[in-house]
Length: 166
Image 1: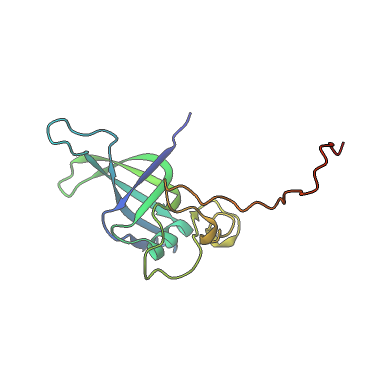
Image 2: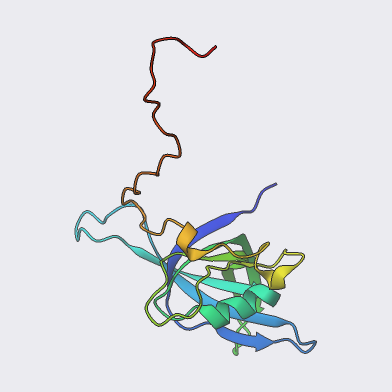
């Protein structure tokens, strides 16, 4: 059986970081995710608002580096919770439990640091950033713009007598 969710959207509010009684970090936030199709009558794309929960290192990472309006890519699993409201009525909620959270946009002005970390709750080392950092200069953050041609390390031979070297 498989329960895997990947979402890309903008945070609708700043992440709320809390701690359990045992001190485990948990962050909750929601993503506004546009659907792939446009509404025929209005021409706009409907938006879904999806609740996300992150635990431990991922929760701390999200609360530190993400804020309202920031684009995020969330990878996790769908979880359905049953609960009771104040009147004793049974309720059911769907939420995504985040395993990994990535930046979905390029670094904005005013952000500190020259690296683009990712949060990974399954990381064995590196503070929960999924095996280390990747320099921001090495990433193609232009999303769709053509990349500059690579510089060739080969030099053309000027001494051509027409004979193959093998």
